Amino acid sequence: MNVLLGELRMVKVLHQQSGVCLFTHQWKWNPQAHAEGADALVMSFTQFAREIDGGEVVQVHFDPSRTDKKDRSGSGPMPASAGGLVMISLQNENVQAVLFHDRTSDAACAALKAFLLRMLQRFLEVFEHELEQLQPQLQASATPTAEEREAVEAPFRRFEAELDNQLIPNGDLSLE
Image 1 (cartoon, rainbow, N blue to C red):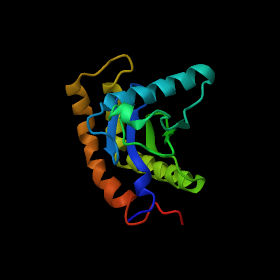
Image 2 (cartoon, rainbow, N blue to C red; image 1 turned 45 degrees about the vertical axis):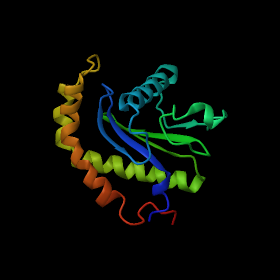
Image 3 (cartoon, rainbow, N blue to C red; image 1 turned 180 degrees about the vertical axis):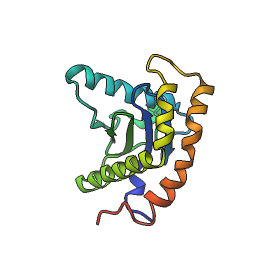
Image 4 (cartoon, helix red, strand yellow; image 1 turned 90 degrees about the horizontal axis):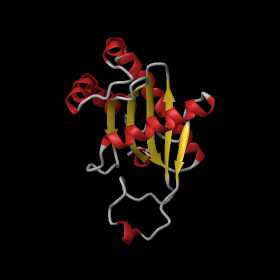
């Protein structure tokens, strides 16, 4: 089993202008947590970065809770992580890819960032035509309904096979 696979929490690919999620894969994420909450968080960080200096969100660290776990009784969106959580982000003019993972060593973080870059490049290769068609369909001011989100996400679901078979074959994420 891959050494870094256990660090992975969730990966998302979002449409850059509208913030609409195109693809999500969860490894260790509370299935009852609303996906739109993570999408909104990513978009808030992205908008904030643009407003303060015109830059991009590259990495966000979330420290582990300091409160007693008994007091929280599952109120958090994810299983507890002793070292906290990290969100890394890569983007181009069309899409933003984000990876949530457990905080870990610098070497592991570098390997996870390289994985996210490979994943984003592959996503752009596989869905070049779909992304071109999507541009006029999604508008930054429109808030899509659940049905519209479902219709937008449907063509991108086949990326699950790419993720499983191409990007994470036995040990492709190792520290070597």
